[in-house]
Image (cartoon, one colour):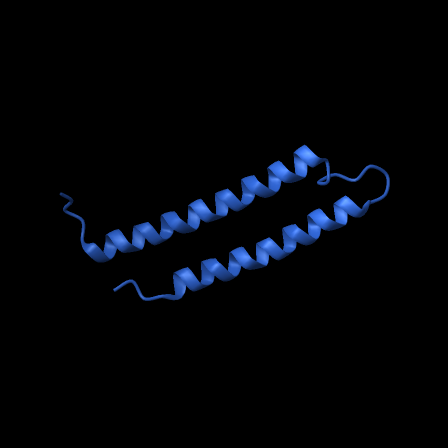
Length: 76
């Protein structure tokens, strides 16, 4: 089927999982922030802005944790 080594296939799958997870996180946060209008401040920040940015930071920390766990495992 493929002439690629199995370790290289697993490594590339892991890289693709990281890319897809990051892009999905980015689009979810950008869509939620833009459509709800919580990404930008109008005068002073409101409760929605605080909730959005708290979610943004918590989900970013979770994404980084998941990526670190995924990339720390040996490829073999």
